[in-house]
Amino acid sequence: MAIAPFSYHDPTSVPEALQLLEKLDDAKPLAGGQSLVPYLFFRMERHRHLIDLNNIPDLSYFSAENGFLRIGAMTRQRALLESKLIIDVCPIMQDALHLIGHQATRTRGTIGGSLCNMDPSAELFGVAALHNATLRVRSSRGNRAIEVGDWAETFMKPSMARDEMLCEVTWKLWPKGHGHAFQEFSKRHHDYAIVASGALMTHDGDGKIGQVSLMVIGLSIKPTRLTEAEEMLQGKAPTAELFAKAAKTVREHELFPDEFANQGYPRRFVSAQFRRHLGEVYARRVMEAAWQRVVGQKTGRPE
Amino acid sequence: MSTAKIPLTKIENPEKTRVVTLTVNGLHYSVETTTRTTLASFLREELRLTGTHIGCAHGVCGACTVMMDGQSVRSCLMFAVQAHGHDILTVEGLSKEGELTPLQACFRAHHALQCGYCTPGFLITLTDFLTHNPDPTEKEVRQALTGNLCRCTGYKNIVDAALDAAKRMRANAEAAA
Image (cartoon, rainbow over all chains, first blue to last red; front, side):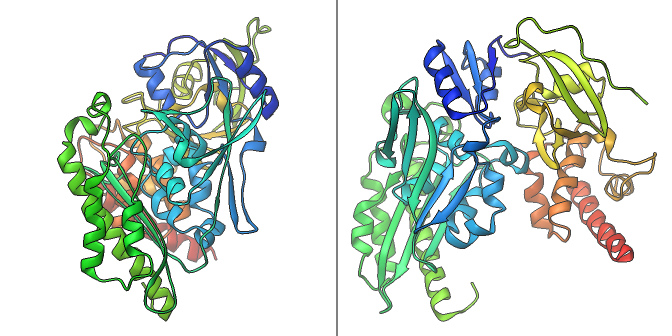
């Protein structure tokens, strides 16, 4: 089995990559390749030019400064997973990264590649959505920041022009000791998620929920932020009933447009009704788990 | 022992063909290959290191797993040119001077292989995993192995071998300390 012939380019700087992207017809940036290379093998995709970004050290970094997390697009999933800094400042990333692919795919897989591939099951897009991330894209024409809510153009296609490239993702960090949970349902551990849900939560110091962020992936082409549920929880004393009621709002959300509803594994095998059901169940579970973690940290109890 | 090949004549179209210079199992190679050749095919066909197996050729089965700079990667999901300047370890490079590593010895002792096709991938995955997690639980071993498929053993013996190898490696480390 061989990939259809392509021309290979290996720029060593971002400007060089952007120039190639602008100049070449039908050029595709190659990040970790853990999805793109199989697509090329299956001939689901075919490109005249591949621009390999793996030799651009400037795209591989992460830092937490002034309350913001900044991650270079070519930062490996494994580097994030093994980072003490990330565990410390953004622990939900760990929960999500553990669920992505396998040890060997995380060695190569990058955060930017995942965001640009935009698989509806992708955990990192969900994490970015929870944090209202900003995605910084560049082209020879200039730089632009895209809010995560505007990132999706259509099924598996981000709203970038042909000559643009994602260079950095950044988001505001939540206060230290916030509650977090990320859980997913898949047929086997590490399979593509059928549905996943994530929650971030703070304690207002008075037994009530402070700030809260909730999302579900697997319902639509992009992560679904549960804004109504967030409003229901803010400033309330949490109870099992309240979480159950908030989770029910999952059912109100838009699902995959019909033309994409059955595209790709695992959507092909899972009815919309079941996905909604799972969304509700997992949303409730992560709300409870995130709150447990806040409370656990408040009282200094181990989890 | 094989010797490193000499770079071939100068390359006419670097977008299609490159000379890849890399280290595999401690030996240096410089070999011309097409840019669309995967690392897995390169190892097998250009370097004749056929211990690395290709199962699915699209990143699902894990049979082609090799180590690049000390971390396991799918060699079928990388192009050989992307390994240029890097250090690769394949299953052939695990044992030193014909002596099995503790992990390999445990695979033998626990009957952790039958047809053996998947074994190189399992060995590399577990070598990477046990280096970073010398005292894993059974659950952690099973999670680490989700990226490797075996159609013969039912995994039980592989997990047993991994846990036993971890134990032996810890004992070795203690004895050395």
